Image 1 (cartoon, rainbow, N blue to C red):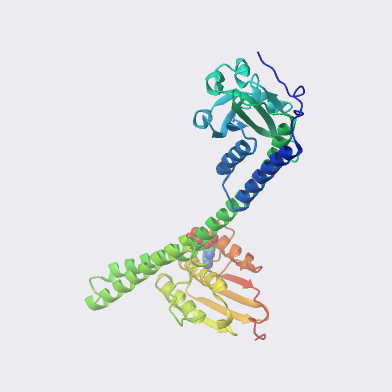
Image 2: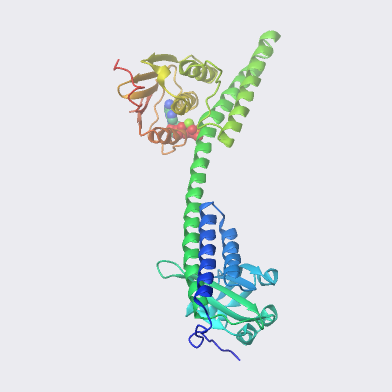
Length: 404
Ligand SMILES: Nc1ncnc2c1ncn2[C@@H]1O[C@H](COP(=O)(O)OP(=O)(O)OP(=O)(O)O)[C@@H](O)[C@H]1O
Ligand SMILES: [Mg+2]
């Protein structure tokens, strides 16, 4: 017969002050362990298991369960179990209506003398809980009062009953555990956000560096194929080797981009290579696709631009020239790079057909993101003929030179 004994079980008069103190210490220790595990970045599933195992130990029980609602709100499932029969209990489902866990979740904490007596509420549970007698269950309630699930513990049949002090301590532990769990979830969400940002960065770097270089290498190979019959073999061989070297660089960049070994890939970086040299390399790389050499001007102390910004600076030059080569039908292009009191400004112009009012934004959108992440701006001026892109980012005061 079912008996829910919550209000009828009183603290045994034999409970000594020492013994109560000892029990409180055990629960305090359990709470500290859950909080420490959360701070150490323990994952969600592991944290539920730890909550079950600490609750079992602190209540001196033989088994402990954490039960949460499933996708179907009428059912609960055991997401963590510790102690005797844990393997059998894990993953077991019980209905919200007609189970002791359901009562715990929807009502008050529950205290019972013999778990097996309750199985008439949900028959299949009879076999799982057969060895257990005294038990208690409390709802896990978040600070807003939302009941997230239930935490229950039980002892083997024949062992002493739990009392109201046990219920109070299990409830308090459950609230602390829910707090730790929520903090862990916030941490996991922040981590998820960081991963998304990381993916965006990889996508931008892939697009602005890697794809454009592959495109340029393709154009170079195409021109070699066209000239293959007429071109001296030694010269053709040399150009092929250069393209192979470019492809090796691209592979290196993919590796670095994916594994995030540095904030942005900086192509052709050799020891001693300055920013100027790297810009010149990118421009040189774009020349075959353009079909003409763009003009390039440096103004101010360009060398002071640090690596974090150099990767973006190169991406701007590469993407802008790639667009000119692919979309502009231009005969001239220019690249101007200036460092002065307004920070670093990159201006890329061409005399092509203009960007027009296309709604497509892919590489250009990346360039805006690359400006905004340094609190800078990206403007496109293309009234009809020619394109004029200006990318500006502030530099720390010691990096910006005098106006030129
Ligand atoms: N210099 C330019 N001259 C003429 N049209 C341009 C120029 N730059 C961009 N456009 C137009 O603006 C569109 C958007 O450019 P954007 O760089 O954002 O994308 P995309 O070059 O088409 O694709 P992706 O950059 O992914 O290779 C282009 O499709 C093209 O129509
Ligand atoms: Mg583009």
